[in-house]
Length: 327
Image (cartoon, rainbow, N blue to C red; front, side):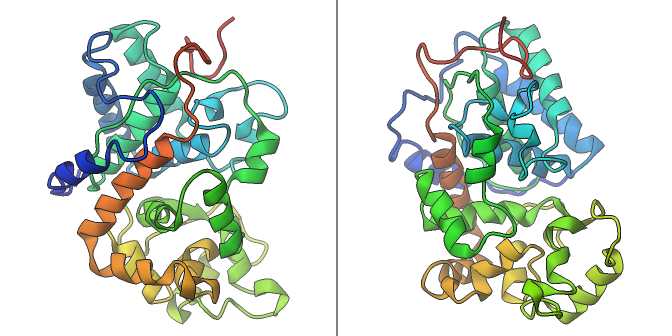
């Protein structure tokens, strides 16, 4: 398994760790109550990636999709009911890795029962998934408690989608308390993982009702994707989000955008859309040439995202299992 030599980012992560943090989250929250927490989680994430490298992207995405809906409270993990987040449009048949989180939670409960929230497990797991894929390391802020409500309707409204125009994506990040740097840096998570045909087939044959493919898509890549995802084909077939650098967390994703090789429309518009000229384009160019800056900004953005409206103190609960609220 590849792991990037990114420990130099530690100092910068420590510098930004407490900037703008207004919650009660701390890096040493479980030092006394669950001292082996990080070892337990890391071991299970390693096992998951050894079984399937794609799982790193899936675990990272769970944390992202959790935090955007009522804050980072583990609500995306809840089962039951018709309006849960798992069934929302941006998540249905898309988010995955729930069984891995179940395994991690069971291992954590065996080490220290009733202490660690599912929301914190998601945050640690996302960090480890990135680091073990070659990406940066950062100290995760902890102390979140689990929410008791899963809101699928809200998830459909606030989660960015591959079909959103850039101004909508920026607005959704802004509404969550994030900025333009966060938009571009966190989009760089697409340096690992895969996307289903249904998420980008709109670019291949009849883009925006023009009867032609998306003109911002590289022609050789277009031909490959048309063969992989024919019209009326299986929408669940997948393609790598980062062409030619599938499982390694690096800045190659941004190099692809400069060469019209972003897979999703929401990727390529960061560089090729008219709106990008005054918003995201310059940062895409910078990250494509400066891997260290991308790693530093990504770590900082993950800390900021992990601090979206966490439940602390007496709010929420510590779930016994991540799929259900406590009786």
